[in-house]
Length: 134
Figure 1 (cartoon, rainbow, N blue to C red):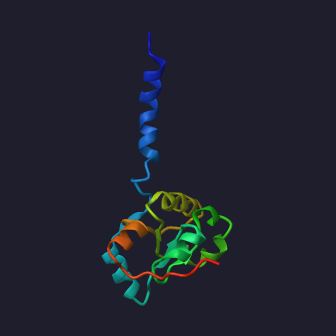
Figure 2: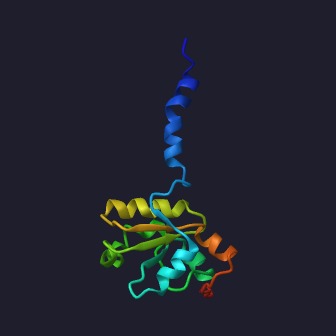
Figure 3: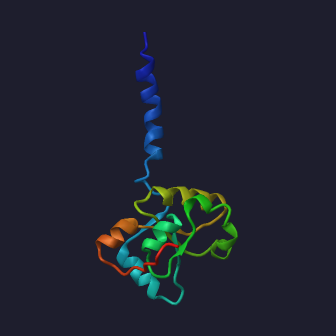
């Protein structure tokens, strides 16, 4: 007799790998590459998809904040960048995948993910902007 629990595990295992946030939907951009891109005249849009509170506590200079939960409702703010490079980051990567999925469904074509996200940026002691939360 087939063990139902083992059968379900075998069937579901590939799905778990697909849901793993370490396999990003966007092209990885290193911190060094981002610093170089930000010096160019045609710099990418830098999109911080963390909460407004996290953004206020510290973010990469030049980044705009649209939390991953608001991507669809604030899409009009991003439409001008639909066919331009957008580099996304969050704290550790999971929210970038959610935002990337939403943007891909809306036809955005040049989505990149900052390697290491904001945790990596801070750990490398790179510039950041801090604002007090009101």
